[in-house]
Structure formats: C-alpha cells, structure tokens
Length: 269
Image (tube, rainbow, N blue to C red; front, side):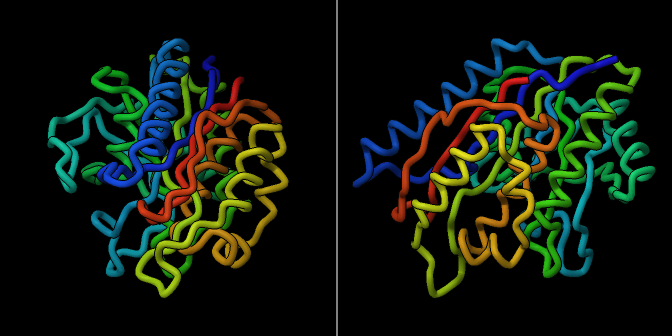
C-alpha cells in the first residue's frame, strides 16, 4: 500500500526579468525551495496536475479530465522545452483511471499526449533533471465547460484512495500542481493581478482549509482570479489528495509585468 507523502503547487510561467529583477529572483528562489523540499521526500513518482493549452485537447476534442497512461511521454517542445522523453508510471495511472471510474470520474486515458509548457515547467521546477516517473493529470480549464473547484478537489481524494490501495512500484507519491495564480489572458483585463485574492487563497490552503476554497463556483473563481486563475483547480486537486494538510507559502509576488500573480506552496502529509 502506498501513500501521498506531500503536495506542492507553483505558477507555471517564467518571463524575462528585465524591470522586475528583484521580484523575479524571489520567484526563482521560491521555486528552488519547492524543489529542495520535494527532493528531500524522495518520492517514487509524481502526479503532476495541469491544464492543457489546447495543444492535445482542442475544441474539436473537448476533454475535461485526463490521465497520462504510458511508460514514457515525449514533450510537445513548445516555448523552447526540449523534447527529451521522460518516464511515466503506467500501473499507477491505470489504477487511478479504474478507481476514478468507480467513483463517478470518467478520465480520458491518454496514451500519446505530448505534455506542453505548462506541464513541463511544473515538472522542471519540481524535479530539475531527476528521472522520477510522472503521471500527468490534465484538469482542462481551457474548455468552454471546465471542472469546478469542488470536482477537482474530489478527484484528488480519489487519487489518495488509489495510491493507498494500489499494488504498484510507485508507493511514495508526491502531487504537484501547476498554474495560477490570478491572471487574465486575451481579455480587456489582461495584466491585472488580484493580490488580495491570491494571498487569501494561499493562506487558506496553508492553514489546512482547502475544502473551503473547493466550495467556490467556477463563476466566482473566474471573477476573482480571471480566466487564467481557473488553473487553481489544479491546486485544489492536489489539496484534495492531502485533506486537512497544512503547509507553508513558499513564495508570492504580484507581477503584472508577467501577467500573473506568481506563487507557490507546500502541503505536508
């Protein structure tokens, strides 16, 4: 029987530091602190939750929830990321898909999806060059109908149950979420950051009260954090796998220059 040994979340963009050098350095330091904490846990596998930026799942295939079921994945290579394949953990991914189906979550099982920059930057922050196997989970907040915060949180609980029951080599599992915080994209409010919301969200999660955030509607989350802020469903998926877990905010910088509230945190099992 396995267990979830920790949960982490981070924004998944990086832009040039010109004009925001000090803030960018603090963001990078926070990301490296996340990596150091994760490495210290020595996980057998990572479950990495992210959105797909309409590269694998398009308007022609409106997939809301998916899990990568493969022995290895080849990155898409967008935004300069290398196309170097990385290992998956097929037994854990298949167990998750089966257990989720039994609990009302029909996950698309993606054998040949190519993780884009959102997944790859999150993985890079979490692991660097480490060869830890990854199970990608897509909570697709770019679709016209997106999973609610509560549904994402509930899926995280299903992941916890899966890991605890699964008989597979990946016994010590960490969950890493990418995306957020508040940001508006391709919108008249692009460049806006809702610092008050971001800090409240981070502090609530760190206090072990993520279930309160999971009660938000999609409409409320979008109004507070923007269409890009819907990616915080990934964070709530991670928190659902560690119910009531407390932690710490690793970094936060409101950065309109990067079109985002930049933040990260850790939850301890």
